[in-house]
Picture 1: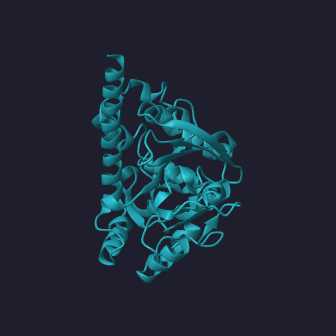
Picture 2: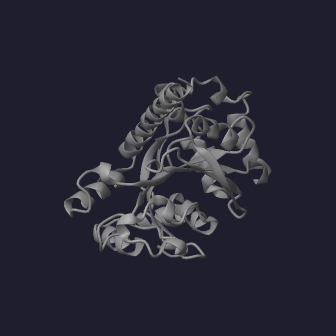
Picture 3: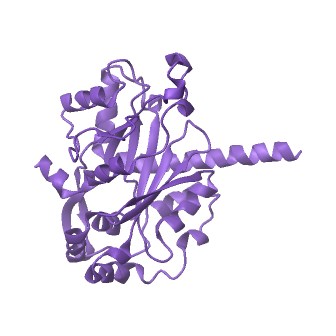
Length: 311
């Protein structure tokens, strides 16, 4: 009886998780035109029959490392939904910390959570951030019904603080473009990632897929090169440059600022499984986790050093 109950609970939790992921992807796709454009190009050329054929390698969120918020708060949602915390990462120059989380089933995306080390910013920037987040005196996730997908979806697409002014946004951007992005976008999905290794021959490497993307006019992040490669050569990543989206700041001022982007990942087969035929290779046979050096450059997909290339 206990086993049956456990299975039922796990099935319900997976259904809940799928609803949350569906809500995230729906809103993300509405705001990031490159998603539909890329999927449309893939279908026209026969790489996939429908968007459901895409393997989502991972999704990512940005956050502010202040009391009651940041990774310690946000991860509670995904741990409750069955994810497992794995490895930490540090980005000294960008003043960021991060963790990645493994999904409860291999078909589901990994999650990458990062946070700004607010205490490492200049005092003036810290003051701006705390002016917005200081009224939060307890972890807002603790007050959520984490068994209600609609409640989680609403939380991830709403704000715990007031809409910033254009002046404060600009002041933050001058010292940390990550900080400016997060103060305006909150927990909005930063990117999703197309796994390329399972695509048809001729498209199943990041190099080949980048060629496909550029042929269709998509602009790629070239920070550190268009292909970011881990030292072991087994994890290769690239990304589009975020498009500018219209943002309304306090007082009604509207300005175009960087939105979200799309990432692409190639996870190569681990040496221990190189003998396996292609049809036998599963997710666990490929390079797992992330690489700080790759991620450090991917972050810049929303930075003006990249988005200015669109103009």
